[in-house]
Length: 614
Figure 1 (cartoon, rainbow, N blue to C red):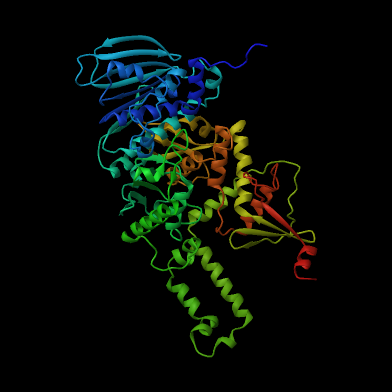
Figure 2 (cartoon, helix red, strand yellow):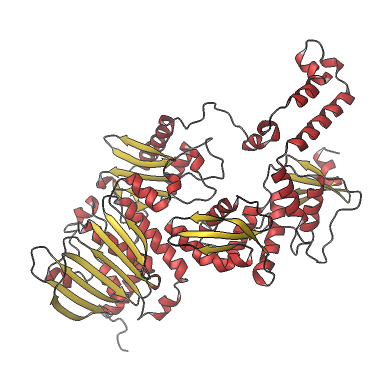
């Protein structure tokens, strides 16, 4: 029997190793940009073609390499950053594994030009499939330019697993953003398909945050800075009003290296407790500096997961630093009790208490019962009814006409989907709203309890799904089109979904760099609310769980359904409740919302009697 075990050829071994390091174009972007930072560059240019599938090029003005170093850099385990095992535990550089260029050369065609300041000429090297094809002297500026072309050209199966250009480009922008945030003193630029997406001048961390994450953060940041013998924390956290409904602009850096840490994120969230709604997420860009011997950065191939020697100390410092920063800037609540945010939206709070209403209230004996001594026992049931009538009539007067009409119109305009489902409503059904969230419907030997937001999400989801396939939603042209300026990453997403938005009633046109004009919206979108709707839509669209493999259009439909649905805490009229219930039970799947939660629960008389021990 012949021997079975043989050594793998170098090119195949390199391709296997590359699978850990270069998973997609963004992985190569990260490795190449980090090498440029380590080379002491003050100006780093990233050039992308075809979302990195055709070209990823990084040009820097760093120290460059000698001819021998340039050739050695493509060998596996070749590095200038580690000499002994102890060095692994004193890492200050970004790249150190010695596999990045070898991995890239195993799965792409690579061209390298590099020159040191003390050398008269530079070095040019071509590598393909781990084999050096050409090496010669060349005229070149000081620094390094490395271009990788046709990623995975020799591993077509890996190339087939890459996602759409828009999806891969988003990942590239994410990696670019992380490195650019880490080093605000370095000038960066990103050019994709001959269009410059970013040009970031060297400056302060706050300037870099605003350049990358948007101007809306300019006046909504608080400074975080705490220094101790054990560790230093610095950076910025968003004011509570800057919190978003989706987990978005949250960045942790340890010794300038971006990390993902649910543990430390929990520390920040706990610092915001009772300052933001439980379903909101604060913005933060926080840097932790501590002795490299107290942290292990080499526990994961991407180096984004690390281990601290004492996690509890780091957690406590992060939580205390953010709390202190928020308190310093007087954004912590002055009273320590829970106030339901929906109370602030009630007409009684928002609308003026007119003289007419004051007179009506004061003349009531129920008012006297609470303001004069020994009067409470004189309150009659008929007066309670009168007081309720007064409140309800006042409320209907106080409701903003735009919101009242808008919510009624949105339900009136909804076309009932013709299905075989039957509404539980009868001609004499009396509906009640509980806690401005649930609708109670009398039903056979019991009642149904409908969650108004979940129900409306189901209705909108089925309507929008139909619209995205063969029944486009009519667009209402705006008399005064709104201009929308976005961060580059958000602009790339909006470009990607423009055609699908058109089917759903949104007419949006590009208008120069990262700017769009909203020409029209669906008829039930209130004028003046267009920009806010698109902002929220992009937030929800961006942060769908990566574990759930929805198509682009499905994510868009789900985002719109959630965004446009009637929220909990909104008072509905009897007519609105009837229309919503009828629309729900006309759906193909009325019993669950798009995310799988129930839209209603059924309570039987016998269940209720058991609950009371009967």
